[in-house]
Length: 105
Image (cartoon, rainbow, N blue to C red):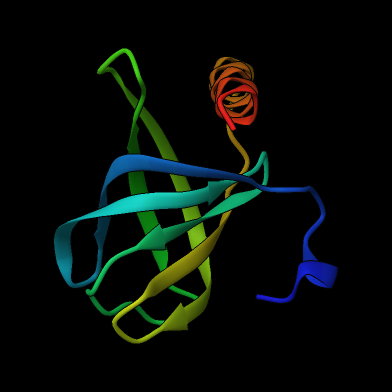
């Protein structure tokens, strides 16, 4: 995905993730993250436009549930998703995670 299309800056990260799409449940890693989306490193296939459920493992060990639409897919590398709207508590947890990842770099 081109940087010019992004509404917000992403921070580099390396967090475990689980995701569920039409092909089933899979694991991956979150390589970059913003308030509006992320890149999931995985060898599994998804379709652009597909809605996926995503769990990001926080440094505490807890899981942050998100949902989004696949906007970019690259075979054997992974995919980018744009997050669907979420509630205020999820937004706050996501903001805290992004701030923590940004400070560790």
